[in-house]
Amino acid sequence: MGLRSRTSRPVPPLTVATRQGVAVGIATAAYGVSFGALAVAAGLDVWQTCVLSLLMFTGGSQFALVGVLASGGVSAGPAAIASAVLLGSRNAAYGMRMKPVVGGNGWLRDAAAAWITIDESTAVALAQDDPAARRRGFWVTGAVVYIGWNLTTLIGALIGDLLGDTRAYGLDAAAAAAFLGLLWPRLKSHQTIAVAGAAAVLAAALTPVVAPGLPVIAAALVAVLVGTTNWLGSRDEPQAEAGT
Amino acid sequence: MTLWHIVLVASIACVVIKLAGYAVPPHWLEKPATARTADLLTVALLAALIAVQTLGSGQQLVLDARVPALVVAAGLYWLRVPFLVVVIAAAAVAAVLRATTGMA
Image (cartoon, rainbow over all chains, first blue to last red; front, side, top):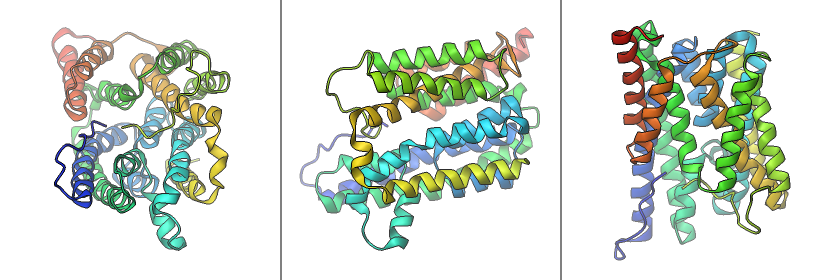
């Protein structure tokens, strides 16, 4: 998200990677406040909210889980889990991309690398040119986001706890705006815009008809359909790069 | 199923997915169709969540203060305003509309 391009030549690559990692890490960690507040508004307690950030640690999935729980409650649990898992599936793709860069140093370090493999750490790493700078960018970004995201999640959860009636403060609207912020940088082609539009219409149309949570899962079919047929897609454009 | 079950099952599943990326042979996801679908999946799910979060109220569709708040948010993202500022602005729009106009 909004990575500065490398302009100042004399700065060593490792320093550039560290600076980018810290900058992206701090900017991303700030979202944690909104996640914490929204999770509490969806009915989670402060502990559950913090466990999500500590363990799951992938923002899109965390927002999705609490978003579905907010609309359907505990009975929408399976749909909430499925939404989180589907949104987290891109981390497997990032993992395959990052394994040659940061993997192969024993299972413990590989597991740690996997844990912090998210949009931001992947994006900063791939924005660097040489292997050492890529590794530095990955670990610095991952570590700064991890620490910051968990701290700000706790702060947000405590704020949400204090607010009480969250609708009066517009927190339900904040949730939609947060999702839009995650979607916005991905709307780069006709194909992604068409998929987003169709998925939104389908989910809204199904809301009165099927159980809460299922409209979101059904919308995933749009992606599978368009993804396999490459409808509206350009011939050989690689689209699976990390969202820079 | 309690909230704790949901939180733990979903978290563990997401961690397993991350680990799988490092465990699976790399050529698996390198087919363009698979990579494209993984990418579009993120887009479709986020768009669906926006629709449900903006218009849904249980199993009903309603037009309330969330709609103008989302329109304002879209305008601010268009202007490249930072994420956190947009989220706070959207909340403020909904809160002010509810407090001053009696909008639901």
